[in-house]
Structures are given as C-alpha cells and as structure tokens.
Image (cartoon, rainbow, N blue to C red):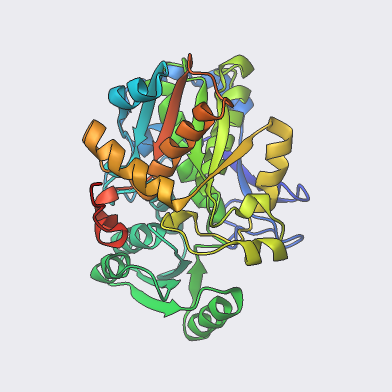
Length: 388
C-alpha cells in the first residue's frame, strides 16, 4: 500500500494528479513535492513495520510507487552507522557517528534518488534522460538509466576528473563537457532536447530525487531508535539531500513518531570556495569558484530559495570550510579510522572540528556526519598528500 495521493506545489499550493509529467508547477515554476495521506498512514502504520531494514524500499508506503509495480533496484540503502572512536577522542567529544553512504551499489547516496526516480519513470514513455552533473549524480543516473534500458545524456564541467566522466561512459551514457556557466549549459540542453524526447532529471526530476534522499533520515530513525545524536552535519551543494532530510522529519512528525525535542540540530556545511547559500544571485556567481568537493559546486539551484526560507524557519546555520582543511581531514581520518571519506564527508568532519574549536558546539554531545560517497574515486584528483 502507498499513501501517496497528490503533488502539492509549495510555492502556490496548486495540486496535480499523480504522474503529472513535468514535476514542475506550470503556474509558478516551483519544484513540486509529493504529498501523502499521513492521517490514514498514522492509523495504519507502526514504526515496527520498518524494524527490519531492507534498503530504500523498506519505506515504500511513503514513496511515490504503487504496491503493484516492480522496483528498479540494486539493493541501495541500509547503509551502516560507524562510530569514529579515534576522531571522537582527538576532538574530546562524546561520540562522532558516520552514516556511510559510500556503501550504496554505485558508491553514493545518489543511488537512493535515482532508484526512486527511475522506478517512477517506468510508467512513462521516456527512454532518454538528461542530467547536469558536477559529481556523483551523473554516475548514478547512468547506472539506473541502464536498468530501464534507457540512455543518459550527462552534461559535466570540462575541467572535471576523467574518472567521473569515464564511469558515466562505461554505463553507455553520452557525456558532453562544457565550460560551467548557465548560458553554455542551456545551449547544450537545448541541443539535446531538439534531437530527442528527454526527461530533465536536474529540473523536472527534483521532486523524485528528494523522495529518494529522505530515506536517509528514515533509516537514521530506525537505526538510532529515535535517540538521535544531538547534532547532524549535512553537506549541501544542490540541496537534494538536505531537503530530503527535512521532508522526512516533517513526515515523521505528522505521523506522531518523532517529537520536536528528538530532532537533531542541523548544521549545513558548504565549501568556502562556493558558499552559495550565503550569497544571493549575482553575488553567488562571483563568489563561487572550483572546489575539490565536487558535489558541493553549485552556484545556483532551484532549491536554494526554499532552503534559505527553511533556515530562517528552523534555525539552521551554515559553516564553511576551506579546501586545505578538507584535505587535511581526509588524510587524518584515513590514518585514524581506516576510512577513506569523500571530500563531502571530509568537509563535514572538518566542519565539526571548526565548530568545536570556535566554541559554537559543546564537547559533551554526540554528533553525526554524512559521508555521501566513496572516497576512492577521488584519489587521483586530490593527489597523494605528502607527510611533513
């Protein structure tokens, strides 16, 4: 059973029938959200229904799928929680936990998003998909488009690592490299769209990706049995993961499974080289430059306006970290914990170090950081760090 019943536009509150093809509001252009009959779910669901985690589809009742359709899956989700004991001792904090999304089949949390998106798109006629990717999303989209026997058109920055491009191509995707500005990307997209009927994952698919991303917090809810760490650090580029976590919290509250006092404090982590949420429009474009945390390189996103509003409503704060601190933390964690974080995971631990050092967070707390992807694919890009 699925409790899904409509789309709701958070901008103008227009509602749409299921399988409205664009997933973008035709009235105001806002990314649509899936809405669920949580009143009915509250009467019929119980947290014990999720007690045996079997990946993303554990939460199928609150995902945009029907009870009869086949899931496109590579067994994504059900990623482990690791205790970073030596890092906790080094910072003299109560405990640091790591949600290790690197153990998804494609090596990143993007697999959750794409599994839900492509499962949903089975009911449409689309066979060609397009995505603007600055990091791991292109790889995951390439994987799952093949499960649907489709083709993915991936648009990437022309100075990005060969490995990221190569992984997309191994799955049969067509990769177009371009100088990373809006006008160039728009030209490439228009050229692709004039040749084929294309589903734009970057824009039209945002609502579906958010649904997949929210399963991260659903899993945390089960794994910690509601006793969350006090502080959660989330890396934010495009904003899909952050909004997925926010949407999961809202839905759990409406189910009356999660009370306000149980919700962790959230810190949004961004690169100092691309602090897009701290800037507005033209300021962002001039302030943002390349960062080694590739998935955080988003000068603008259709989700940023909503995230800024939620920051005000929920008291979320931003901490920004320099690339050098990402590298140093990356190396330190590999030596301390035997874990090779992604740059986005490393930036979260570096951010925690900065928050403790500056006194913005107390040491007598437990913390959870998100490692969104597998660090091994970044070895050649980041280089080997020489010992002093």
